[in-house]
Image 1: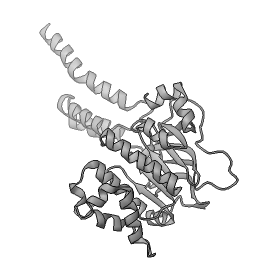
Image 2 (image 1 turned 60 degrees about the vertical axis):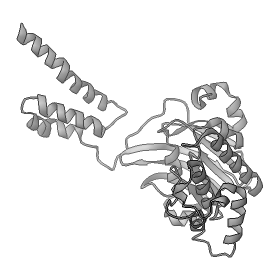
Image 3 (image 1 turned 135 degrees about the vertical axis):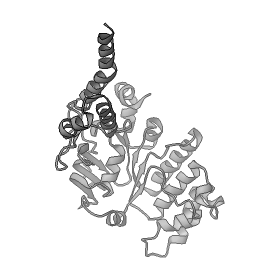
Image 4 (image 1 turned 135 degrees about the horizontal axis):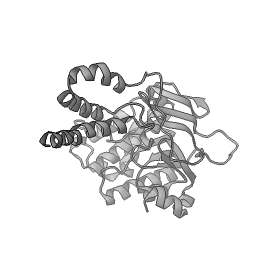
Length: 328
């Protein structure tokens, strides 16, 4: 009887976890086992299965191997038809256009057939939960993904497989998550780096211009960027991108890690820049209410596909969209 109880206990404590982890890893939406799951299975098998090392290398390891790199793992959206986040026909080509854009990392496809446009002077917001593909969309536009299908057009010219420098020089400035400022350099030096590709004589005038827009930066122009607050560094990252004189500004989660008052100030500045300069913007953001308040149009990403799109005021007013995707 004691041996029976011991055997049942071993089965519950050892073999059921192995089966559960292995089963979860091999579900249809996961063509290969995650690294953390592999480690759990590896330890359990080696410790508790008879001839564990042999069992792992001969039988289990081939089953846990990643699929051939030439294939992508599809991650289907939860439902609904294909939605395009495009403006109405204006009679001219949009400033930025994504046609059937797909992309990802390694074997995992993150973006699935995105159609999206940004017109001259327009602010478009991409909303969605973490992991929906928002950051990947911006990275695909900027030429930072190795695996991209579909097409990206800027000012009617294809830029899909161009290098990041070529894309930046064409007039696309990217403010990434984490801001990317140079902490050891002064505010002034950081801003001048934003104009490194320019060959005109207006750099000093633009410095004064953005110092006027962001007075906090003017007060700290000789201060090391790394000693400033998160909100001030975000303003610096935006101003540095503007020093390139872009035709469109891509912003990735500008509110990330900022206090509510600073977040509001950042979005107010972005709205003012759009109205005064006519600068087009594509903003990735989770703070839906603030982002849509300065936007002309918006779209919602879910598992790499656009599931809702339309004018900003309509998205704000649609109760179903608000509750399902916007969180308010």
